[in-house]
Image 1 (cartoon, helix red, strand yellow):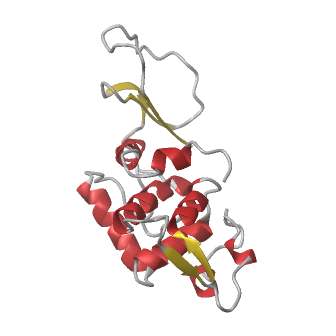
Image 2 (image 1 turned 30 degrees about the vertical axis):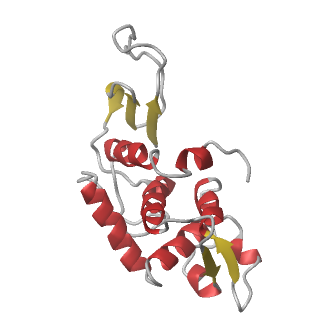
Length: 196
């Protein structure tokens, strides 16, 4: 289990005591106070581990940077886009509505479906759209962006996070990606939404 905590404190850093004595049941931890960049607690933060659905933070980043108007950009989601999805995947429920003609969904709606229920169907639809029909091209974009952000212990093989031995990151790299994503349009709003 990976625990990633980024917090903004209202206390001044000089007055804050970051001595951590809480009990956390996770093997990989990175906790940082955002205003000062002070590391509050860290355990195995540099160890490469499977990111699972936290992969979707990078999926969000790549989509956000390649679709300037997500609210007014529509993707025709087809059965072919969802064909490779594991039937046990977490989904936003697209397959219930996709017929032989597909269904049009805004990129913004897909981003909500990506982040709230951790929809692997949304991840595949967005990756196919941004990758011009190629999931592999989209994954290359993810890895390139990870490198640009300095996440040298990260490698992606898919946009959703289903397990693969070559799909890994670290708690520290995830913090870098998440801090970056927090500065992108809609990310913080979507991630703080309880229902949509």
